[in-house]
Length: 124
Image 1 (cartoon, rainbow, N blue to C red):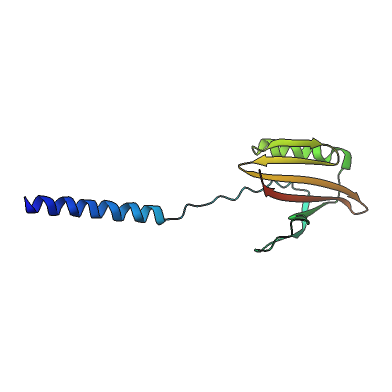
Image 2 (tube, rainbow, N blue to C red; image 1 turned 90 degrees about the horizontal axis):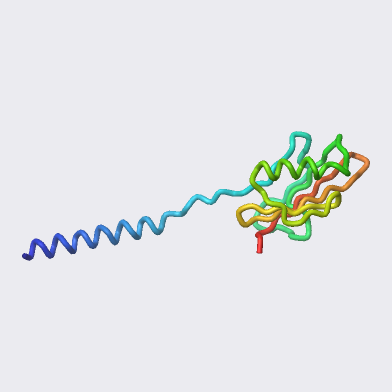
């Protein structure tokens, strides 16, 4: 009978330890990244802990392309990657959402081509 109690206590202790260890393990967080077209070259990117939310997270330059149709082709790529359109204000900007993240895409026509500003934020 004493041996039976020790066995039960031992099993409860092992199960408790296993549950604690399982709960303490961190789950891998997969970062959702916006798609980038081949013709988009990264010009600047905010990194680190302190991100200025008034500035774009990434800025790309597209040397050759048409400002008026850029978002149409870029929208197709977002949709193929599983993003949903939240706001469509073509050709000025679009907002996409996937897995709790929103990305606002704002192309601007310049002498160098098209500058594409990406603003990322957590969806509300």
